Amino acid sequence: MSFVGHTCDLAAARRELETRRLLVVSGAPDSDRSAFLDAVAREVADEVGLPVYRFRVADAGERSGEAGRAPGEAPDTVVEACRGVLAVDPCVVVVDGVPAGTADGSLLAELISAFAGSESFLLVGSTDAREDASDPCADGWALLARAAVHCDRGDPRAAGPLLRRAVEAHQVAGDRRGEAWAVFLYGRMCRLRGRAEDARGLLHAARETFRAVGEAPGEAWAAGELARLATRSGSPDPDALAEARRLHERAGDRRGAAWAHLWWTVARADEPGFPWQEEFASVQGRFHEVSDRLGTAWTLHHHALTLARTDGTDGTDGTDGTDGTDGTGGTGGTGGTGGTDERRREADRLFEGALALFEAADCPHGRAWTMLEYALRSPAHRFLNGEWAAEIRHVFHGIGDEAGEAWVDLAEAGPSPGGEPPYELACRYPTALLDTLGWTEAGEPLIPRAARDTQPEPRAGFPRPGDRDRPDDSRAHVRLTLLDDVPVPDVPARIALEVVPGPGHPWSTAPLPPLTARATSLGHAEIDPAHGVPADGAEFRFTPHRPGSHRLRFTVEDPATGTVLQQVEAEIDVVPSDPGPHRPTAPAPRTSARRA
Image (cartoon, rainbow, N blue to C red; front, side, top):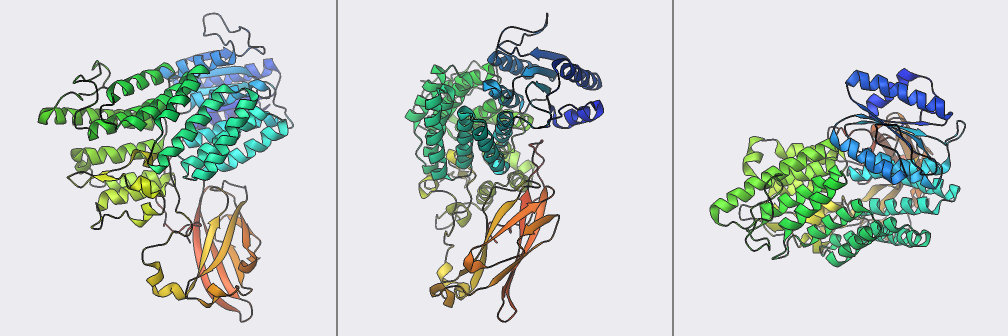
């Protein structure tokens, strides 16, 4: 995302658009801005050989547009028209006259959300941003859209800083509706990261504000996210998801209703006799109607997963529940060896379709989980690629999903002799969810569906097996905690340093002495202050100046004797400020600021 403003540098704007497929031009008189947008669109369209579609948003939502082209009417009509255009073939779309700083500021966020994952180029002309200072409300909606894209891709690390800025921008502007959406997305991000209590409080607060300002779609989305929190305990709440679907339908939000319908179907898919074939087909039809590629991909994923795990009964009285014309149905009514083979082939087709859509939508989270389940359910596919586990682990690593990597480790290792889950899973997931983990006769894991709903981090203080019997119980350790979300360039992030004595150490029953912790950056970053006192709560501000992996060194000393007691190094991943196309980096050492 880039705000070009009053630039006249056509070449720079064209390069920006070619790189990010998204350009927002703010300010400038209408005629100048429109002429500049047209010039950029023509150059890019000629270069890549794509058609151009132009939409104009009328200030009062009245009809406008050019003869022979799809009209830009009210904001919801513009978004629907853009979704339809983007879903057909790659093209260049120009939407001008977007009122970024008014009550319709959500239009900018909705356009960017509709565009996410498309192969098209999108140019947006924003009417009320200022040359000297961008409008706080306009910035807030743009920040929300960028954070939502990160969450949709399954990479919520950079969403936190964006959402904090969005909340502040909407508060400054006095926009309660925008603030409610920011709080909602923050709650959604917390759910993705496995922070259930934080998510619950934020989502309840967002829902109350949505009710107060009369934002019915927001209330429905909040209800759906609250219902999904129940899946983390291993006990989904289909009734709450059905209620969220009714709220979406009552609000006229077809996309929201499709998502609520999907999660309701997933919550009930493993129930005996449930007609999952019919419901998955219905959900896919809903997503096709609103051109939601990501929703379609997750539908195919869960449909394939159900087919691969079923014994051939699907609650449809022996019928397959599909017309067999779009490659998304199944043969749940068949039995015997032939039926099993057919279900496996159909599941393979669905997994392949989901993989293609996740790749097109640039959703590495969905891609990694589909690769894993496809490999587990299709031995032929797995054995064709001897590096299958390393490849999947690499994709999980690219979005910082250590929980996903742990599931790959489990798939490789097989069940433990004692039946206990490995530490890397036990420290992240509730016991109730891990109790639903099953195994096939061939020794393949039946991973709980809810495991892919979150990317939980290790719980603080979770004991490792045999910790109290380890000889280093008499030692003190350095613990580093990243207090903010994954840093972005030029934005300070806080790091707390603690000295944690083992249960057999003298400091475990006495106050810490006035030790000194010295911090050093070993790359292109600043860290301030240079020294801290752990006994007083040492906290450092880490400011990186470029994305990538940054190495930090912390040295704990006894100032009374000048003795170095311990020295640790940690690596912190810094993500770009803008959500560009996902390109996973090579796995780095597992030492991190959170677990040094």
